[in-house]
Amino acid sequence: MARLCWHPDRHDFPHLLCRPRAFERYLQTAVALLGYRVGVLTTGFVYLFLWPEYASDKMIASLIELTGNTLGFAREVAEQQITEGRITAVERRLSLNLLQLLNMTDQARLEGHRGSANSTAVVEAAAILIRIAYRFQTIARQRLIGSELTLPQHVREGYAIQEQKYCFELELELQKLKSAGPSQKSAPIAPTSPRAKLMPKGQGVTGSATGKDLFKYFDTNLVPQIEAYRRLPVLLQRLDAVLSNITVR
Image (cartoon, rainbow, N blue to C red; front, side, top):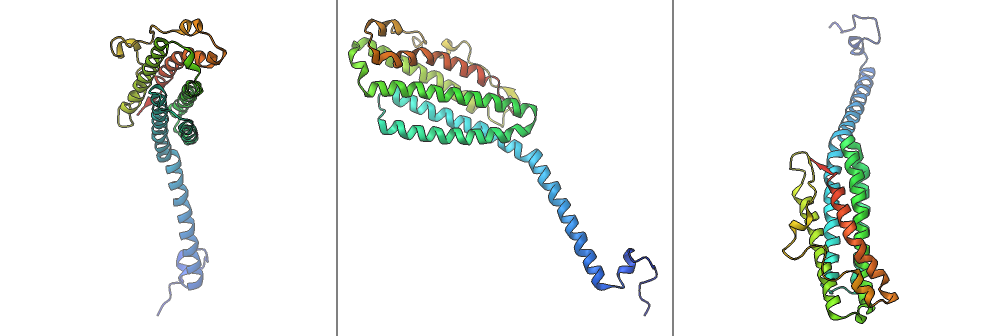
């Protein structure tokens, strides 16, 4: 029976049929090279196209979680239900939220120009949220040590109302983030403007109690709290402006 060996070139495929072991090694090498190339192509496709989209979605979800936890903490302070133990627990939770968020922003930068721009805006928004939480933490600690006890009742009530208004503004930002999910069309998150119109009637940012009221009954222990009330409106307005720079899918 004739063997299929008519071509003398040992690199030729028909010639390998005459040498089973060589043919086996040839197949193993070909399969290994093919598997390597397919693996590289698959990894590249996931790394460049699929994974960035996943990271971008997770980045927005992490920002929503950070905003929600900040709002929850602010409400506890405004409702005067905060304790030292809760402050410590919230600090840990916000730290974990921030770590997860920063990890997602690094990965979302692979998405291109929009991913990079969104990552920058999200990092700035996260920094503002942490500063907002810090201001509410200052109010809570001042309240726990009893620094407000030197103030008249109407001043304490006025600032409790102010804290509720700040919580309302923060809740508006959270609602905007949730409504602008990945399923929506590509568009920037609309700023809240004018902000006063979105508040309940009679619940504007400016109330009867101001920093001047606190200075009437000045005490050195009240300085951090006065500064917190002064900075919170500025931080909330800045947060609204930064979130408007985020473009969702």
